[in-house]
Image (cartoon, rainbow, N blue to C red; front, side, top):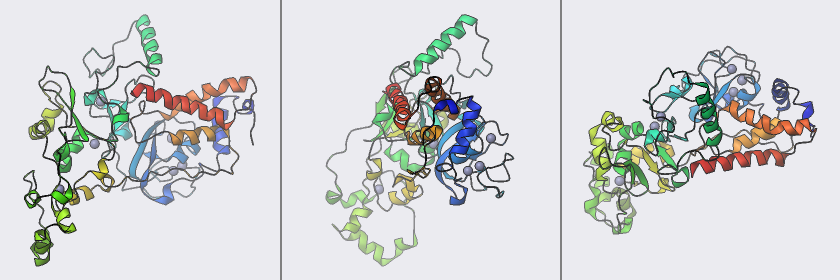
Length: 428
Ligand SMILES: [Zn+2]
Ligand SMILES: [Zn+2]
Ligand SMILES: [Zn+2]
Ligand SMILES: [Zn+2]
Ligand SMILES: [Zn+2]
Ligand SMILES: [Zn+2]
């Protein structure tokens, strides 16, 4: 059933209250009972506790609170109905115990990237990229994909100097342009890679270091501190296919010690390793490419040197091209390293609120539904703060209200299509 918007848009608060009531279908289910899962997590900035809430609770319970969408976090359980969050959960009356298995990184303090900047949807011009492993967000400029926009002044400026009035005007102009074009294209755009692994995570896991800078695992390097940043992904190491593999390749190329397991000493495993041409051999032969020399140099130098802007020849961040999950070597040395993080081998599921096609669509429900469809794993035009998005949606809808026109699903879809289009433009 559709209603004219004038019914809804007396004020935004009315709308939000109305929306909360009108959403029994899609957003009536807090994800708490489902246990820890990968889901879009929202940080409520109004509530004093720095905890995460599910999308249903963000709409139903914290409607009038200022919120920041943190995008997917894995193994996360909604904190809204727990005793830790004082604000009453409207979806689950019974208070639940504290979630002890949730991880609260710096994003839960509203801070992002290794530069530790807070995110402000009103002023942030940069695209940010989510790390596949730690799920923190990184500025393109911090990954040396482009200059930091508009910062000629020293970067850590905790107390910004008060700007003269005309400078403020200019800043506003810049901010309004940012969504249509604004920034020069980055060295590599979100369309050209599937997943990103940040330097800290790459330094933490040997498996990334071996592949960094080889085909399909792009790193950003420079040949000297005054040289420009460029992409490095080595040369395809041709000719090696599992069937042509030589036994000499069974020795891991990094020189890393092969982890000992009890089966290593069993006669059976010996037999497998010496039986040429069998599928067992294919699994034991390491097919990882020879490591890239620029990457090796970065990882040998340690993370502190890699992240020191003055001397760094590369951060160690890795951009994995599409299909990277199928390219890993799965030999007895590599596979266990990958299995520590199952999402490296298989794309993981991210929870989506259930669809209910029979429900009477309310205005905001349509909007939220479309919002849920925006790509979450990709670099998008910044982290869209929930509040900002809602404000945009409201200003889009206001003319309908003023003219007493009925909004239909297509209109709302159109709004989000434009939004997605704009975010693509900023990327390329
Ligand atoms: Zn919840
Ligand atoms: Zn709140
Ligand atoms: Zn709740
Ligand atoms: Zn940063
Ligand atoms: Zn990371
Ligand atoms: Zn291998």
